[in-house]
Image (tube, rainbow, N blue to C red; front, side, top):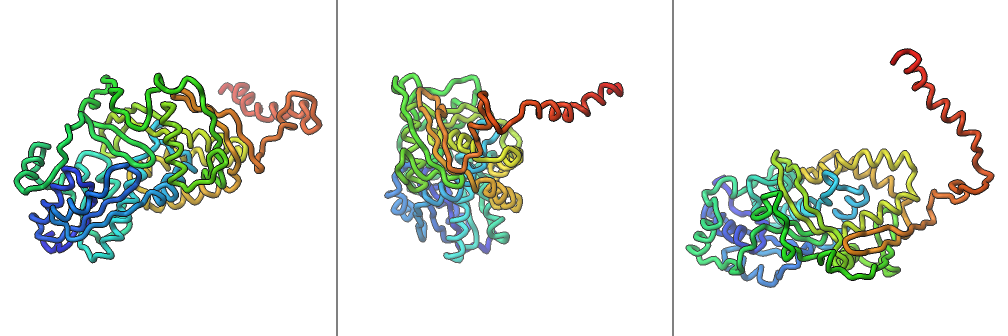
Length: 399
């Protein structure tokens, strides 16, 4: 790697990436371009550029990717009702390929030799970043400091920062690590590593405790067009604004908390606590509008893909051939998924109370238990006997 002249670093301005920036310059005698993405993490970005330049960055990019994140990553996944291991709505997993894509674009524009990230050698993010890098630029060089340097502890990082005059956050360290974007916030490590230890109430930032939520429920109506939400209570919104609005609504009512022990791609189990208020509401609403607009067999076929599709996102294969095929098929299932869903938000719960659509396949005339002229009850007898034939034969032949 001695021929490296310029590196694009995914830079947050925190302790890890601040040390990495200086370490790259010292280790490879190269230029470092710092890149920070605004994906709704609600951190102060104004100090990013002066801090990066003070640490040695030759250039700094700060890009607002919120709309792209929601429109091109969150919404496609929610058209699929994606969920990993039945609980995780893939907040971090969906953000990594977008960050990686922009990093590669900057590397191309800057004529950089390599890209770098601050993910550790033990988690999923290193895989997600690097699979995306290599899918988009097969010959790119990747530097993952946590896998090669000898700085193995927070104390070592702090000592390195002090030695090199790097300004690092002086706030009291939280007993866990967090990752936030417009879709969610995650908490891992520290006190949460014991799966029996409950999360502390003061840890949560996007949602109030359901116990402290309003005593009166709140109704909300979400309109969909071709599987994507387009308005809330009749007000049209951009993708990022819509998700942020649902976050506020859900957060106010304590919706979207999850405490999970999940299986990392690298092979170990990991405990994570998540807040996904807007995403929880959105998934419930999307499934409700699908229930009256999607053909049964199409729905069941799409549903059979959810575990495989969700794993592909979680594992880091967003830019893979199989994802393109699955996404194309899923998007085809959404052509008639348009209409309005009404939900009730109340103390941690999100309950669908109504759905309507001009594309509805639901017919009250067909479904009614009252007299109708479209369905003969006698037809059911032949239907049942034909479906029972193989069961009868199995028993008669001693199966």
